[in-house]
Image 1 (cartoon, one colour):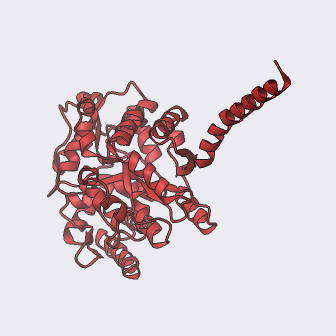
Image 2: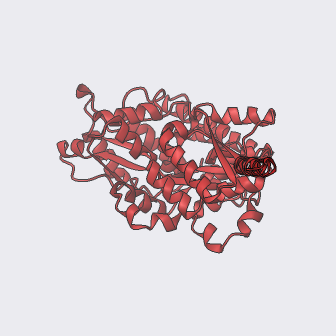
Image 3: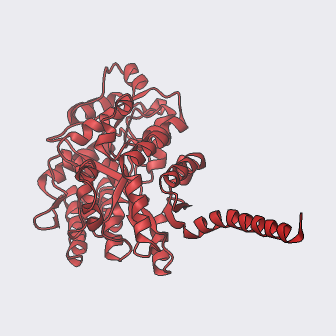
Length: 426
């Protein structure tokens, strides 16, 4: 082979090699990144989060998804610090309690214009509760949903001669007394009035107010109105169960979500107010526990709190179009189905919740029923500083249970503090 031909071949080979290695480099250079700040990694496990990342990147190879996991405890305050330091991730997972506050702080972006460009069925299949806007704007899309219902230990009920869960307040009071035996360290419930996290009000107190016929906030006046005669009667009923019947595990003021779940898992507590997220938690704590789930007992009306984990686009997102692509994907039918199947969460889309595989999950059907009943609400989405407002409510209910104030005084004082916050946010 002559020198010239050999030189030409070597040049062509070098060019081909350079081209081969530059293609993936070029693709990587053009790939966008979406950093997803959330607390779910430790809860659902690295394996599933890896599968979710792979599925999204397969559908959108031009975007690299980088989950940034932080513990749930302190997540709210940490997000505010990151905002102040201008280091917020592109997509931020939030609780319903944080939406209005984060919007007012300028931490998250309205999504209305982006949602309007999607097919009608995209947003129509998201439960009505999550259509709630703050100051006329939609700031979030849910990835999981759920309401508070009644977990009941079937073995304990059978031992007490009870064939099923209580359907009314009167039945609840009667059953709770039968299910309580302090000498055997057996109790009907775990009263949860611990100050932290303030989400404890979600379980014991807010549903009770709605069941008693009270309204938490008047949408026409944007004022707290839970201190009505109906609200006072509901809290008095609760105090009677805690203080007179003593149906709760001792330490009502110091018991929180962690203690409530551990007590129920032990088998010594017969009932628990809990959301669908509690199914996976109980499976971890005691996979052999025999229990079922029913709608909450009815007072004058039905009532429950609807919660959820919601994705938002941060105001500091590097590429807001790429961030929206991820938010839309995870809250779309494919993403919600994958999330619900992989985590055991309650699907935040009706077109997914109506699928046969979910209907076969019998423990979850009580939540479907509960969320379809009147007064399945999420008032937190209209609360400008829900974390602080929940703390105020917790303190006042503690005062009432301890006898420091009457139920009316406690609710009047809580309503006055709430209305100061609401007025300042106008």
